[in-house]
Length: 428
Image 1 (cartoon, rainbow, N blue to C red):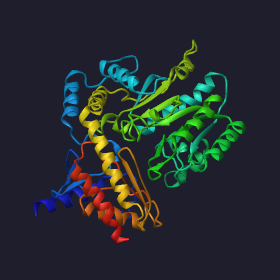
Image 2 (image 1 turned 135 degrees about the vertical axis):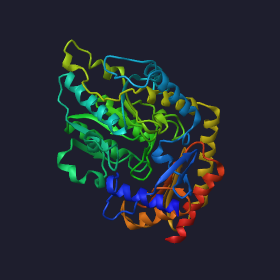
Image 3 (image 1 turned 30 degrees about the horizontal axis):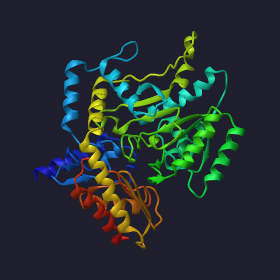
Image 4 (image 1 turned 45 degrees about the vertical axis):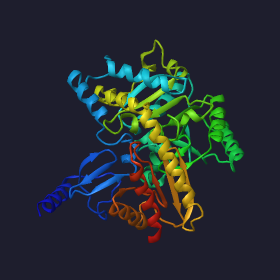
């Protein structure tokens, strides 16, 4: 009785005070109170455990409350909790910048700190536009993929192509020309379309999710096609911005998806798994060519863009500890094991009459259902509720069911995810 009373009280308080993201409060079910998280699990107020099958939006890749990261943050709080980053610097930021640049594509030279994924993209877009401005050019158009997603601030939203997020703001966004993602079938057509766009418009930047479009439903595209697009853009000094906010830190089989390309982006954006979900922090890195365009005796040619919590020492400490784990043998072995289990599931589901495409890349697994549904339609809710009743947190994207689990997930927990993904087909 006591637990039930506490649960009802939490829901009542939430409904009285809270406005949740991605929620139509008039029709949505009450939120589920979560009281604890550890490893690949979290628990609700009634003590029921759930496998976190999407690592809480691809952030908690080393599991929840990992002791190595918790201890690093604890130690940092006792030494330097916070200091503004304009006019000051500190060891955690320096260590993180040096370490990241040793892992990023070789052309990356400088690190700019932000506080979340959207602001990392926002900074990148502003860098690209001002890069051309500082060189005496006006370039007012972005190139982006169809159905891409880059965040919810205005620049990031402009580059995104999913109408359910952008609809009310379409008349207020930056100018963007969209192209399909490159596949084996459309390779030449996409390159031709890209060349035509660049010849007809004043293109400042090409913003893209490398190899995997997350919010579009974990849709894959070819490295060969993306490489060719980057080459075309860079020949015309159209800056290439790789959004690695979802793909970064080992999810696609390499540390960064851009590692699978021959041509490196000019600007690269990181967040989410950067701090393992322990702290809001993001990175916008750039090449020396981009950075040098801001060096001038004219003060106004500097990049006058800032966030209060830029390079927060505690966030930097979390990120450094997360990199320790990423580069450990244990995590490397788990990433390989997850990919192998995913591949077995792909083979098992191939030919199922209820399944369209089923695919995996690294620790990412996605399965398209042969049904039509809206992004936030009733079928999506039915699928989500089924998974939660079975003790697995998965959030379908339209008719796509996917999992992107924490690296520390056990074989048994991953098998549980695969089983509910298969069993849900019986409900269709």
